[in-house]
Picture 1 (tube, one colour):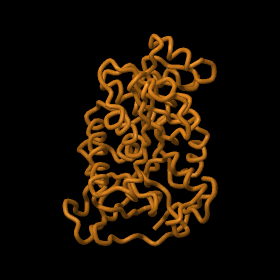
Picture 2 (tube, rainbow, N blue to C red; picture 1 turned 90 degrees about the horizontal axis):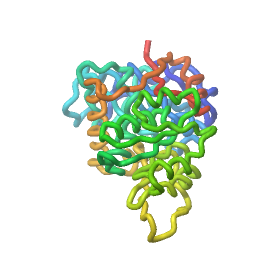
Picture 3 (cartoon, rainbow, N blue to C red; picture 1 turned 90 degrees about the vertical axis):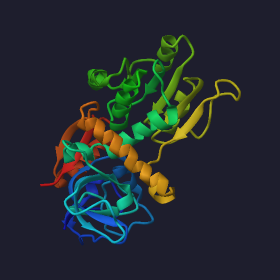
Length: 326
């Protein structure tokens, strides 16, 4: 089969088009003919470092949407021709190829009316935001949340999901994306180049801080933003948890949550893997019924994935980019 191959750890530009052995379904697995595969920051990050479980060359791509091609033994509920989507196990070959194989218990059936492109835009970023809003922060109507990097995948989905719970949403963005995140539903948008975000957040919350923070930037940003959490609130770290806690004990009592969806494959039990399906199903239904924007801003060919990943690595990409098969 045709695939995008990574021969050794390196930047996205080192990926090359080539031929690879098409996979077959083992027990408990299905093979999917890839129709679309979402691009995510995790792709270029793990490409740089590699993974001990990989054999070379490796195929990246975690967020797959396509058609069931082959069903392995001990699999029920799927037949060839079914339209499905899933968030893959990064230890295994992924979806930047014509075919991909995955554990059947992590695969969600696609709802009627949802395109492959939009389905592939959802798993990694959409489920991360869903887990942050609904499972970790438990936002209620009237709560206030700060989302950093609101124009990105996780940030954009988080804004929309927080607004659907009638929360007040603050976010940060570059000047080029201020109007974009406003259209997604942000109430207050800060230009992170020029605005004093901590001071502004304090002023807008009468000095109390926000009920929740979703930090998509990194450990240092998460540490700084932890000081903006109001009493009893929480911070969700998407791009690395803070190594130190600047908040004095027995003051605002914040909780810190780490999101690592892919770890459900390696460290989770069957219930954790099943929950991946539950979350993705909920998100796909919302996109299909028009209550959530998939934020699909660009589709690319397999040959153009390396350049698109390189652009994603600049951290100035908007919304979601998806590889669409010919």
